[in-house]
Image (cartoon, rainbow, N blue to C red; front, side, top):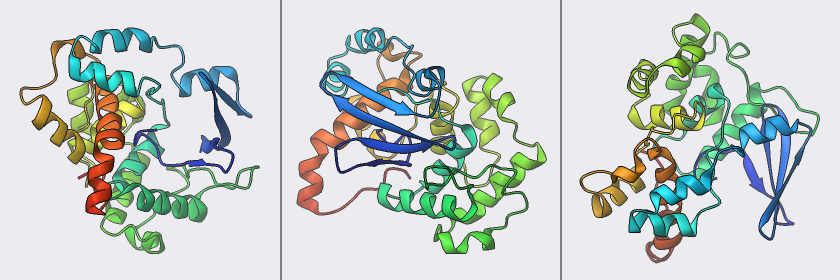
Length: 262
């Protein structure tokens, strides 16, 4: 999912499963098609996987630039998930200066400790209300480090009404970003991830260490005009292409794992 979410796992048969809004979903690739199943409505699936958006049109626009065209051709199956805002916010707070296996481990422990058990032997992501009054010290066993204080502040501000997701959704990108940044520990990167992956503000352009490197090497003056308004989609194609294609050899040689955020 290109760093968009952290609760999906690959199964032995090559399929993937994840818990979304308390329901387990399954996805399996079958040639050119993806089989999606779960105890949810078709409307839910179409919204979550953004199936009604015209990604062919997005790709055609981005392909006006040769670098973006190459990234799109390699990773054209990517879509921007429409995720639950609270889970997305806390997940990307946890993701700071972290790698994917560790992020997934912290989130898994978080859900097991505070989430409601689902019918499929899993755990839903806990709601803000369920976490009301939580302090950083209550999160010690998650091994989230400095991020525990940020999680506690986010929960507090949401439960107090200082942060209201419906209001965030209605704001412009710049105003929405500044509002989210009133949460301790939330900077531009985390805010833009939340705005892109939860609020579907496609002009949000999260910049982690990978994207900063890509921009420096390929777009030192910024993305081309063809990406205007869909910068977030361009980000995903670039992130996936460079991280999973061009960077594999270098990472293997260096025997190291670069954090996905900073």
